[in-house]
Length: 231
Image (cartoon, rainbow, N blue to C red; front, side, top):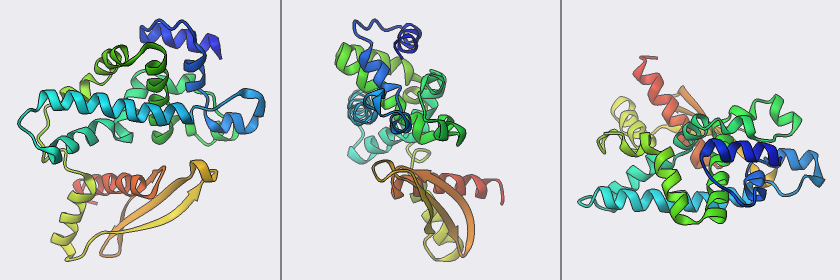
């Protein structure tokens, strides 16, 4: 694992004195499930990284948008730290290619799954924070997330997908969208939910996430794309 971590650290432009944490950030739970002697998976680092990324992004948005209220800043933050946005950052860094997965998870395409990519990005952020501190993590994250942070989007364009879909659903049918859980997989501590959303009985989108709320959001995003395409 250390050679992969060393290569990644070099690509990220970061100087680690100890590559242990970065190595751990690249270990998915499916890998340790199949290899109990492989050490600890990246879930704890993912938990920490989630908080670190949210803090840094919140601080930056607070500085850049002094006239906006809490709700507006929350909307902007959600657009930057959402699973799709973090997965996009992970893809730009090619983190998926460094991730250690169990054989079954690899065959199932987990390496390219949005939630998995977002998770490894957060785990890497957690490792950077513990090894190099908050200022260096902030510098790194602002560089990596620059496209998302600098995107000139109106608040209307950043409105949560579920809110937009609900408005459209009421306008079209007079009723709210219906979200149904159509599947679950993974161990209890890392459950993945699959949700389908429909309007007036017509299925329009499906999504997956680490909890029902995240899966509903992903389904709403797909539904809006379907409606925009005229489906």
